[in-house]
Length: 509
Ligand code: ADP
Image 1 (tube, protein in one colour):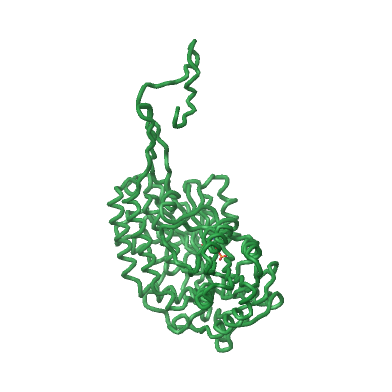
Image 2: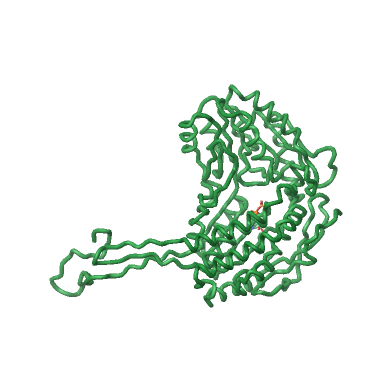
């Protein structure tokens, strides 16, 4: 087994009500290191007892009110203290994350700084936030009383785990929610850094809780009646289950699911820029990213040239150990995921023309390594065109007209992101507007502005987060209506009353 980096904990325990605890059942699950798939650590498998205890702790902390009722500026200070703590561990986190997830170390760097920025950003939003009041002069005043909603269950995936956790923790805590975090079972190690960070930053006991476990553990949290909110990022299949399982409780859901995002490259595009961006878009982070540009739709006049140039570059992408700074693709997260990705590559061999990669690199006989794999001439009904692979595999398809490009882009179950490459400004916007996706980047790779909406349509999710939308998800916006003048009520049971005040409201009421 390869040497563990400094900072990997000796043991992992749940964190419930400010205490580190094991599962009552004593059950634990294995954590594998993806270059050898050896088991290097275990984590406790949360059961019903831990789900109950964590939700009870979060509910008690919420009801007690210190966190929920804290003035925004006081919460701002704690959120910024969290960010300070997170920034301090930037190097250590990169090592841990790269070791546990198999991400190339160069791409793991900076994750903590991005995570810290999430806390600073939402801290700033809550002190700047304003809610509306609606006046009917002399008669009625209506205003929004924003208040935190309650206990939020945060269920997170295994790709860039710490950063994804921060993307939920920051707006939830900023809004005054108390939380139970359930990190993904493939990559729970970096999550074990949160309790120390929260304690050092001064987060009160019970506000932040963490329960490790698998899908069953997640389900116990999702179906807990005392937690009204669930924010989930993961696969479409699991998203559907969570939707169904939480329906009897009428939970408020934010679901960020998968993608099969197209990049449409018109013949007039900046060829080199499109090439660089679409290579990085699907092969960075081992292709394990929900917004990956995993389908390239290329206009016929440049199709052959693009496929050839793309394949040439893909063949030169360096696959190597996560710890090696020259690695551009490293090891996929887990052998189960490796199986899934390599199965799709085999399917692809009968669905498209393999022009680069195609399996395990010869120089890496063990571990979850896959070459940058490119299929050209892929038909729109191919499985590798339709299904999310979540690995370093891309499908390229030609098109002849704008209409055809839009149809190809939309003809999948997902609708998360899209990328449009053209120098025709009107076409860039018109095509973008017709794409069924939550986000479009024009002549740009995936650069996130935290103020913009993040989320998908169709099979890619439910609800939009980002900026104030995230705060809205974790808050109740209660409408308060107050009469200022005389009360005009239709007088049931009295005689001779006028019918002109039926209480139906409206600005002219
Ligand atoms: P993937 O299929 O890519 O591994 P999942 O969507 O299964 O992704 O996992 C994302 C997160 O959802 C993980 O934390 C996982 O434990 C959790 N999870 C899986 N199944 C369920 C479920 N039925 N209810 C709640 N959480 C679940």
